[in-house]
Image 1 (cartoon, helix red, strand yellow):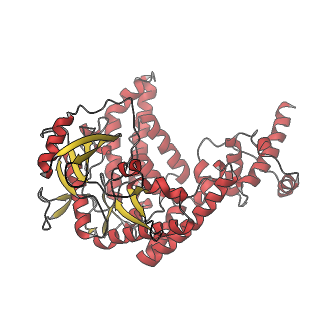
Image 2 (tube, helix red, strand yellow):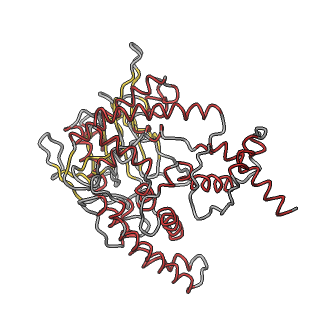
Image 3 (cartoon, rainbow, N blue to C red):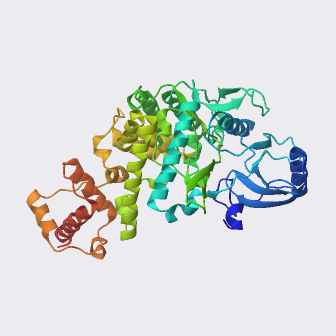
Length: 493
């Protein structure tokens, strides 16, 4: 491993924003703090990266291994965020075989010498998986996936709890006898962009349904207070703004009332399991042995915002092997990659069933067929939305699933799921004989098909699927081209 790769180990690689100011940090004070906490002399400090939430520093000492200091960039984070992250890391270290960084010191507040919340932790060896994944052989990729399933199995069998929430230590000390409890969920959803002024339940919760109900209730209260102001600032007249706010609140009320239709009791129940909040390839460290050419996961990092959840939360395909949407595949290389991803998903599925049981396989299949919880996460978990974006997402949700929020069989197809929206246009599908004729004509070039707007192809695709046809995207592109050409002739002569 080269020096640069070594330097980039043991912290989350976050997107940097050079427009944001760096922390007001006295490096000498940081070195003095590290020296006093670890009882050895810190001789060199260097910033490695700066992200949305944290700055990462490499600490080097006169004796012993290097360490990592993670300093909070966002002082609006409650003190419980660091306290929960530290508790989670310690719990995982004490109760599983998962390798996590050892925590040497931390302070959740600004009441410390550097006046910034910090964690000083072990610098784990290895490389971030995302840096080498594309260069691995298929066999090594399956080896990594098998170890990922082992990690999930460890969480499933050894980190079980009775409520949904974040993990905390009953007292702030790192000892083998530390006791832990489940407490409120720490998430920026509850305290950024004015949400901290809205009274809302942060748990613990007894089910995912209860958790999402609290999130919806929080957004409803927030926009009841701030929705009008946001719309008026966009030069929308007061009467229109009043109607839109009232309609948004009505839609949120409806969604909250229909949560029982979305959450099946069989998947929304105990035991609740510890779930990593960002189980991505950037947070998995691996080591490739030069001796026997083996590859091994040597660490899982970045446990901030982790909480307990259900088996539903735990069972998901790693994002880097998920299906690529067919309309956006533009080369043979991407087509081959998509085929490999399918083989890797098949392998991952078999590993999950073999190690976690048939229920895990059922959940993986259910997630591909029913996207309602995924859409709820888009609305209430992954991002803080402005009024108009939440308004659009709610409109799309009820367009897809109806006022009863029932699963929509039409959306089982991933391309339909991608494009299904109120913006699709109504198209008149020709007869089967005409369709056969379109498909029997000379093969169209990609340049020729590109003349047809993608929203038109998507509209034809969704309409054909709704009528029971099972054409590929490429076939639909041919059909849509002829339909578009014929409609243009009729329209313009």
